[in-house]
Image (cartoon, rainbow over all chains, first blue to last red; front, side):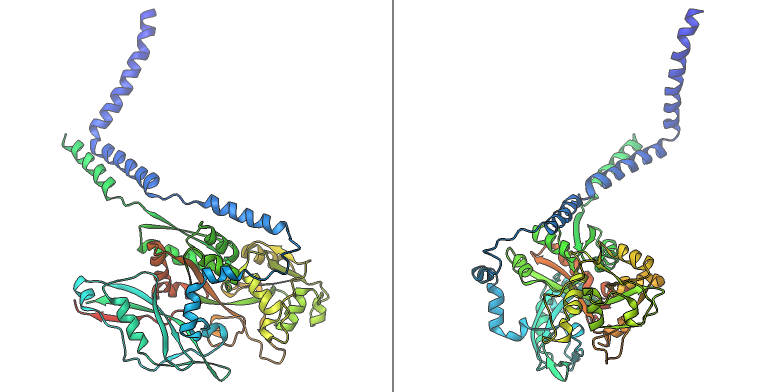
Length: 204
Length: 297
């Protein structure tokens, strides 16, 4: 009687292990694919996904709210003029640009100021592929920021964002520098404006 | 044995084919939040190596986070202040790209009978000089101005251009004018829309695109600078044809450090595809139509 009672659980344990073994044997491929999928998902989730440091932004929001809630005033500094020395040190490049042509720094946005949009008077002058870019099979979009003067000439053209390389930026910039526009008009007067031009290069 | 080898090859190849993804953080303007979310979702489909994270909070939060190096790109719906430009130019060159235009719309409760407003009246309402709708020919109902918190670019833009009357010219510009301290302050556009939609006497301002998304829950007022001007509905068409005079730029501000993810995003946002998404969000695109350059390989 005693021996029967002790044997029963051992038999049950073996049969469960056997069942698992049998199941794996019968479904080797499916089990393998499932395990592989879980491992790959694990890799995607834990290794590929970058850590987004959202906590820092949350702290920043709290800090800004705290700064707003307190007001610390130094009576000696209340009417202090801005630190001119600092302006000179950090803004050297801009000062140089202003010396080149003051209209560049003063360029407005036609839509915001309420001025008319500039009109391209030289549509036949278009950017072209460079031999090197064509040979390398380079395709994609680059964006130019151009400043159109009150006289209609292009004062500045520069590439912003991603660079395609192989001379395409330089080619596009030199092409737009040669263009002529009817300037933006605000209250009957021509003004200098800034516009963005996306240029898509594609190969047949 | 064969199956084991296949599994090992599968796992090893999957590990080696994996490319580590890079986070791209954008934070700032509540007005631009939904629009940039739409643009970044499409960007992530095309550039699978990046994981964009877009957060609102207000233009000021975006600028502060950019200065602190917490975010890659700040979304800003107002002009940068001179001190912000200096801070951002300290370590690297600041870049400020305009990706769309918006019109600040003045909104009221959907049952409010008032149809139009001009700058002078709006200024008087938000500073607290006009306190009851009956003074404007409406119901005998107290006016409840609802304003955004100090982080809001829209709030600062509206204060400067309307409350302080900058748009009426130097003669009328009053930089010391401020919002009525009794105004209800809300943190974001959702709270603003809910407040205006549920309060009969409420009046507020919101980006045109966000107002359109709110639908009939709130009412957009026709706006004019002067009483004698024609009142104009805030819409893309009216910003485009320069009729609506509360237009502003929507900017992506970043430090030009040749960071590939940032450059790729800027190019995408200013490309034809990105600009169509800006239009789809209810804003006016900023870039001219894409120039096509084709060649035979």
